[in-house]
Length: 270
Image 1 (cartoon, rainbow, N blue to C red):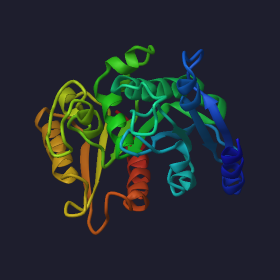
Image 2: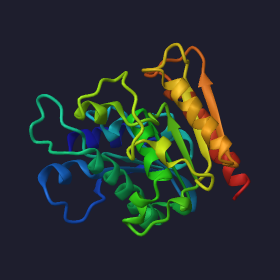
Image 3: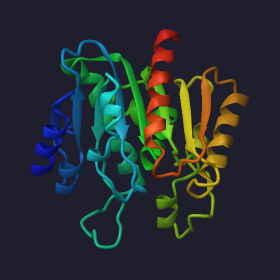
Image 4: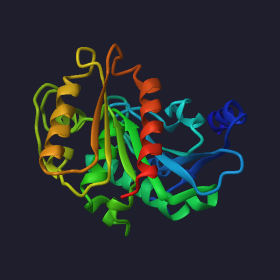
């Protein structure tokens, strides 16, 4: 509660905030009730605005919705920043979370947004999904593998665009750790966005930090992602390399790319 109030004070100059809104009705356990919440930032007088659902990074084992880039909250869009359950790590025995739970939470948050965002001045026809690192991975998974949103009665192709910031597209390394694999041991299985490449997915804007300063070869990984999407005939996929920026400090320029592409995509609807 204190964190939510501080967030509200810090952003009140340019956003109206609904904090800690639950997006799962009747969550079965205390950890799910704690994590399955989102914050909403709506500019004053918001009406029928573009919406960005944003998922934080943190290796699927850490992070919080309060980490949404401040620059994103100044774009003039409605922003939904969502938590999701985190994979277990040392010192967190209360977590019985699996990779399925992480992805399913992301899908549930996006489905909630489709059903409720008009109450906050956002348009359900202009919903984009974005996220950094682990959040970029979740963005790609629910946008490409349609089964996750289908479980909530939402067609993933209703998403206006997918904008992952340095998202893993092979199976996520935190998930691979649970299988006894290392960060540098690649794998593509049903939990890899690469396994769900399709030409009819929403527009995709891939953003990477400098290839020499990225995490675990992430630029080359996402470049292959871009190439495969082009080869299968996806009509609207682009890739950006932010030269000089690291995996951690890429958010500021990435948000500008996001804003430019949201404007471009909405000006040229599918």
